[in-house]
Length: 366
Image 1 (cartoon, rainbow, N blue to C red):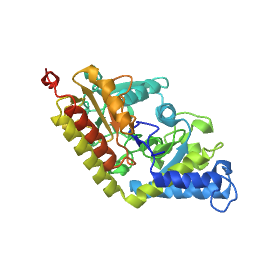
Image 2: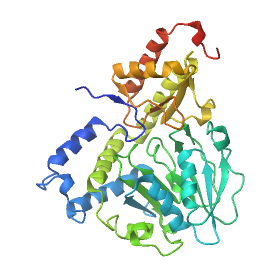
Image 3: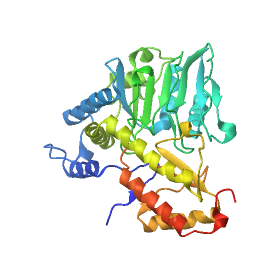
């Protein structure tokens, strides 16, 4: 059966070369005589996987030995908990930029562990744009947290202003999608199921200066410092998930961040260009400077078109474009493994759909 064109927001599509390597390793990993599913998490083979993973993260993110690379369980939500546990001491405030659902949830989780403050928000507008960057931060702010790309609402920070406090970024949906100065962050993290691999793994990259700021005693499983000291194997690691991340990191290096960024820009220009001239489809984010290159969200000017368009996409082997349950409409997730040809195929279907809906009553604004 032909592989479908998969625009799911996560778990997201993976490159075929990665899937092929993963399939081989599932039967036998290297010369070990065992499957990657059977590798011992404290064995030498997995130790080599971790070492290469960490080296590639340092290389691709352009960071030095002052950063610890940690592979964790629990996805993004566990990081929402661990960040304030580790870095929000009594008497300090955690500052949050509320730019979307996951940014808001990160703040809600932090509130269980200490004082939090929203310093900028676009929640009242339904997150249809990014909030204005805060002019100042609370004097007692322990850190500022932001989400670089908002998957549900389709906004993305393309230019992040200077910050006077330690900056922590959730990069789950746009990590390694563009050239970026990662050295400005005290910490950045990403759930794996977008550009890094499969669910069940999260990457956390923490500056060693930040690790020295432990806010309270914690059990080793919830301590970044302990996890770093134990090289991400405080307990049984997600060996196959981390191996998949290694395959994705190798694939990313082979393509090159500059080339990935160029294609991501071309994909976004193609799809937004079609939306901006469409008489049926309406982009959710009108302010072009705020639009995400990873998640393009849009609606139709008549809800009666939604299911017929989904049905037409299915007939053309396209899946995963139904919008999030909070927003409805459509969402096209164009992570690194989605090709320009995939996006062009979707745009062709959009044009065909419009050609088959010629009624003047369907023109935008009518």
